[in-house]
Length: 170
Image (cartoon, rainbow, N blue to C red; front, side):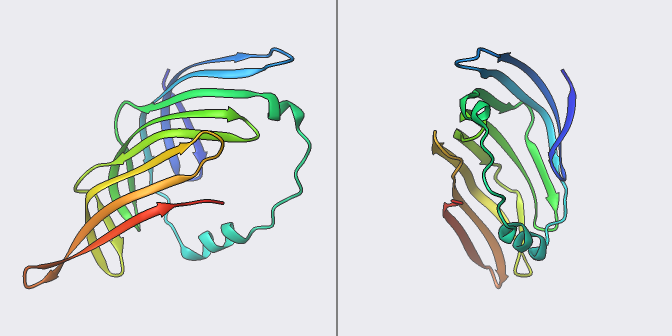
């Protein structure tokens, strides 16, 4: 109850969890429910950092047979919306996800729903989210599918709509 974690730099969360580890030599597993009581991502995002992260050399795969066998079945939900407040946006989102597969090769299904009215800062404009979700449907990989629409005023009563759809794959 009330465990503070920072799994990703800048993403601070408080979790309530009931997780069971079963060390069975033939079929070890981690199962349970994780409720995100509160969470905020406030890290400044820079394009240079994103480019550096995307081009880092990948180390050779280390043979880890235990992690290949360690099965996952974790339900992750939000009790309160997660908050993003940084140089690219100010928004809130709720999540209902399930992490499956193995520690070495996780998969995910479920959805993150962006709340209407959140703001995205892009190209010198402030876009207001009109709808948005990030879906996960691949039980063998983590491939987010984006479906987001946001609008910004142009002046004179006109607006521009930005739509982001597609899948992010590694």
